[in-house]
Each structure stands twice: as C-alpha cells, then as structure tokens.
Length: 480
Image (cartoon, rainbow, N blue to C red):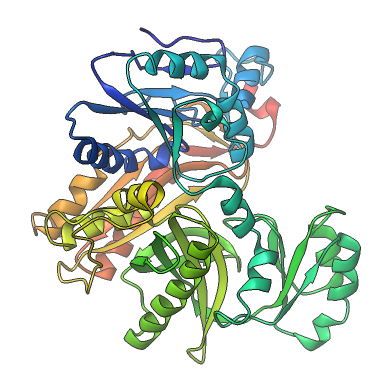
C-alpha cells in the first residue's frame, strides 16, 4: 500500500503488513529517538519486525531517512499558490517553523493519516503513537486501540504553564521572586515600579513559552509594552539575575516516588534568553550538581503525584555567587534527550534501559524496568555540544549539506576511542529555500574527548552552514 494524499507533501513510505508499526509525530530532528523506541517495543513485545512511520512538518529538498511522511499546511498552501517570486524561473520554496499546535491538529485531522491508521489496525491489535511533546491538539488517541507513548497531554499542558509552576513550587525548589499577572493591563501596572527596584532587569514571560519565544529581559516600561501585546494572556514577572551558567537536568518520572535523573548539561543562551544549544558535561561543581539532582527529583515527585508519567526537564541558573535558582519545568522531552540517549548507551552497563524504554514503562506500568541504573560519572570521557542554527532574519539557501543519519555511530566511536573528535551537521533543509525567521536551518552536534575539541567542531559546523545561505533584501533582488 503506497501512502498518497492531497494533504501529504512527501512520502517515501509503503505499508507492509508483515511489519508491526508505530507512529512518530514530531520534528525531523528527533527522528533517531525512534530507533530506541523500536528496540524497546521489540524487547517488550518479543518481536523482531517493529518499524516506525515518521510524520514530520519539515520541508526539505530530500530525506535521508526511511518511512517519512511530511504534513505542513502552511508550506502546502504556499506550493499551491506559488506566489513567491513569480518572475523567477525556479521560485524558491518556503520553509517556516510550524507551531506544534497547528501541526498536531493537521496530523490529527488528516484523512490520509486516519486511513493509514485504519489499515494498520486491520493487521495489529494496537497502534502506539510516539510524541516529542504531548499536546492537546493531538487527538489520534481518540481512535480505538490507538495509544500515546508519552505523558498525559492535559497534565503536560497544566505543568508547562510557567505561572502555575511558579505558584506550586514555591516551597519545593529555590525560586526567583516574582509576580503573577492575569492580563496585559496588570502586567504593565506590575512592572512599572520594578525597574527602580530591580536595576539588573525585569524578566517577563507569557504563561507558555519555549526557547526564548514569548519571553524577554526588559529594562524599561516601553520595552514591556512593545514586546507583550496579548491583552488576555497570563504573565510571570521575575527579577532578572545576572549569571553565567544555565544548567538543565533531564529526567523521567514513573510515579510519585520514582524519578530517574538522566544527566545534567549546560544550555547555551544568547541575547539573555534565546536557547541555541547545550553542552555536556556541565561546568557546575559536584556540590551544585548534587543539589540540581535533588531539586529535580523533588519536582519530579510533584509531577508524579499529579499523574505525569514520562520524560521531563528542569532548567536552572547559577548566579555569580554560586547560588542555584529554579527557572522552569519542560513537561516534555527536551533538546538534550537524544544526545543523552547516545551518552547513556555508551556509559551504562550493557542491557541498561534507555530513556524511551524508561518512558514506555512509566506510561504503561507506572514503574521503571529491571536493570534501571543512573549514570554515575563520565568514565568514557564523552564530551558533546549541540548548536541549533536558527534563522533570525529571512534568508535564501544557496547550498545543501546532505542529512547525516550517523550521529549514534559518532558517539560510539568517540567512546571506544576510534575517533578523537568529530562533528555532524543534521537536518539541513537544502538549496533554494526561502527561510522565514524562527526556522531551524540545520543543527550541529560536535562530539570529542575534551571541551576544546567540541568547541572547534561547533565552530566548523556553523561555518559550513553559513556558506549555504545568503541575505534576502527584497523580492526584486531575487528576481534579478
């Protein structure tokens, strides 16, 4: 059965009834995580025939991955109208970052996807859907015998609310002083006197924000008024604390008592609050890492008591006096999940369950599997960093870097000392794309045996990416 439909931009998938399938719905950058899910289901179900179908929003020139379906209603509309640069012989295709709510709604309502699900369920008694983030717009689980491999979406939404987090965790972890605002009017009234009290800055965040979106460090009332326009949104206002270290802790919760700590990395934050990547191992001291683990376990138990099951992360800052402050819960998988899977695989005893297997047991059985063990030190001397090359101004791609699916192999070779250092460039969109601000053009992952070599790899990878783009000043400039 070939998968075709007017709502699908691209597909290289052909259904084979001899395989046992699950679906992945999310960004292409998390495609490799599904190999761990595949291995989990093969062990758990006692099968050797598990495959996955990846439904992604990423519009690329080509795909070096198997079983991919692309659904992107905005790019689809652009291809139909083809109105951009109509005077050009080969008009560039548009690439823009799609909000997860729009994407999940499009996938959930897709006639092609629903027909595929019905066909799969003719040959297997259950279909799992693996998600990077559980969102309420994903409704495929309302279909009989379809189950989400991830946290409950309604609980996840509740605990991703930064205003709610600030209220419920006051006595759990060290919080930054701040205020809840239930409207823009209240936000403006609240921030007015704070600039004199907090000369380092006032941090404002909407209730839902990620990666620096919908949040800002402000230094004047005018900045607040210009930056935050939603009259009905909830806002969290906190004192900005100057700092140099932004650790993030990745964890899994199985119930209200059992919380697994996968590892601690440092976030690379630019412009005060814009996340562009992470690095491991963390520069935090041993005592600071002990406290970070302790605080994250406490947060995990709060989540577990509420019924949350699965992977989550906690972000912190360490001020210039060495004091730790909690910033936020990410009630979802986060940017370090894939690289920590690769690190754990090379560090833990053979046969130890990886993060997707821990999540599978947490979701389906409210417990962790046998042989669960946390990473205790970096005895394989694996160092890594990631860099998300995110466009802040419209660009045109004029070159192409082939998609590299061998990141897992790179970690293995570094751990076994077959390589001293290496970097990979992942998910490059391809040539002749008009890339909108906020879009991820590509991702660099550098792996080595020391921090300096990792930094060198990131620098080289970013340099290669920069050679594939050019400035776009106007439609006329492109047509000349």
